[in-house]
Image (cartoon, rainbow, N blue to C red; front, side, top):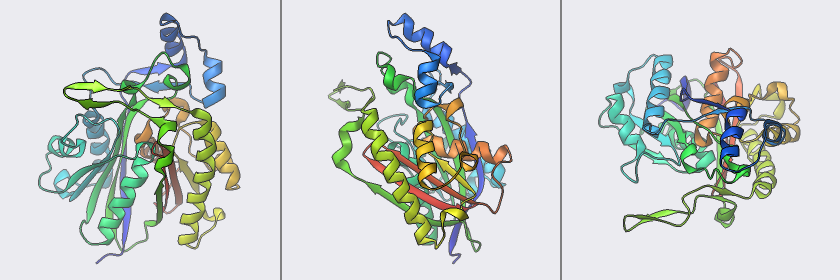
Length: 325
C-alpha cells in the first residue's frame, strides 16, 4: 500500500459574468443602498467577483473545474474511485452535488458525497480524501469546492453582499510513494454558530427563517486570525517543519486584512502568499482550490514546493493542510 496521497492535477472555473465594484455599487444604489469602490477595497481588498447566471447550478461549475483537473492529471473520469464535493450551495436538498457531478462526468459506481463546512469545506474534503487514500479505501480521488454564494446574499446589507462570489476549484489526489499531503488539522466549535450563518430551512414545502447570509464581521475577524495561526502551527509541528519551510501560503480568500494578519503571525511576507481575492471575492469552499489552480497555471507555485493551505468558515470551522506539490 502506498503511504501518501499527492495532488497530481488542479483545475478551476469562474462563471463568465464578472461583476466589478463599480457594477455592484451601481446595482446597490438602485436598491437604495450606499457603497463605493474605495469602501469595498479598503475593507476587503476585493475589486471584482463573478456571479453565475440564474440557470446555472453548483455541479455545472464543479464539472468545468473537474474536467480541467482531470486533464492536468492525465486521467479519465472512470479512473476516479472517490468524489468529494465541498459546498454550502448544493444543487438541491438531496441527492448530493457529488453524485450529480459524478453523472455529468460519466463516472459510475465510486462513492460520491458532499462535505459541508462552509469556507473550510475544501480543507475538510481534502483531509477526508487523504485519510481514505491512506487507509487503502481509495486510490484516486477528485476533490472539488464549488459555490454559488450570490444566491444567498442580502443585497440590502452592504457589509456582506460585497464580499462573495461564485466559482469552483478542483484537485485530483492519488496514492503515492512520494510524500504529498504531509499533515492535516481540522476543527469546529458550534458555540459560534450565530456569527456566520444562513438560518433558513425548508419545511412543509416552504422556506422557514431567513434564507440569506448573516455575519458578525468583527467577531469572525477576531476568531479567524488566531485560529488560522493555531492550525498552521499544528500542521507544521506534525510534519516536523517550521514557517521557514513554507514556500507558499494559500489561505481562504475571505479578506485581505485576515490574510495579511495571518502572514504576519507566521513571520511571512505577502510575497509568499497567494492572493486572488481581488478578482474572485470570497468563493467559500471554492476559494482555496481556485487560488491554488491559478497559482499553478501562472507558474507561481512549482512542483516540489511546500504549500500551507488553510481556511475558516461558518460553524465555526477551521483547519489547515500542509503538502508538497
